[in-house]
Length: 227
Image (cartoon, rainbow, N blue to C red; front, side):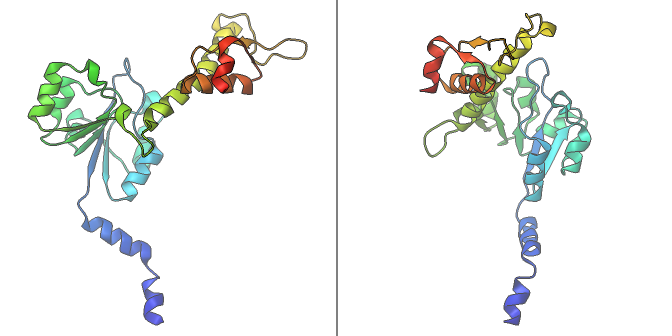
């Protein structure tokens, strides 16, 4: 009985020792070209989950500024801040949003791995040849399937797009956005705005649901997005 109780006293410490005995994975998060992409693949909360598993995360200084995160947010989550892109791309696994460029791939090592929105149809021949020469593993977010044969990353992006579309429309309708100062949901004595959603995919369904939640009226074919 005593041995059993002593064994149950330190489960977390035992787990940490087991993690440290395993090979650690180095993960690099480079700064994106803000003219093309402002997002990052991991938030500070995501970095904390990864580092707690014993892996190392290297992020380029200032990479999170376009997302309104400071370097301190990531360092407090356990990430290492580096000044050179070469230090980031030297990691075992590189996480990006935008497709890797030829210069970025040149900084990566042999048999390394990159995860990003590869957009295979737009990759140039020199990029593909360099990846083949280095025997790299490239994983495209947009091609990841779950057990139901669905594309969860694409679905999440479409959901965000549908939700954001109504926010953008509301801003454009405001007087500060150059509009007529209309409210999607209307007000006392003022009818709500009429919203037409084209398409009944995930983006269209979410946009229609958001419009209804804001009090707007759906018109035309957009009603079928909810059927």
